[in-house]
Length: 94
Image (cartoon, rainbow, N blue to C red; front, side, top):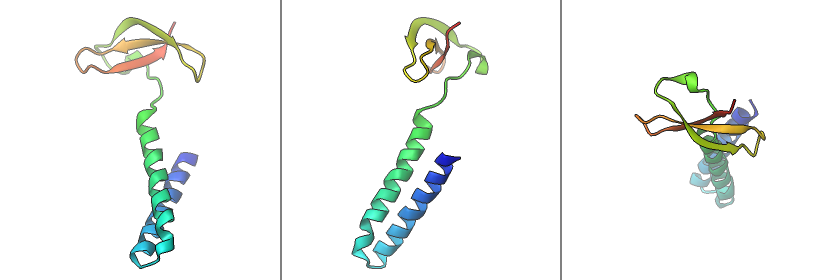
């Protein structure tokens, strides 16, 4: 919810700053830039940092020998690999 609010506020600030800049107010440039940068950061963060999914989300997943400790949760994670798509997923090790 906070992420959505931040995205809405950032888009509003960016749009208002861009509109004011196009209307001739040179001092509005930082608002347009920062609003767009924060909105882009929120969208990239949503795309980049997906939560670990379970291997039961689809078929064709193979467990690999790779394991690592997730720095955020401290759990040991196991790497799963889908040879058809080349995608890798991470789930908590048993």
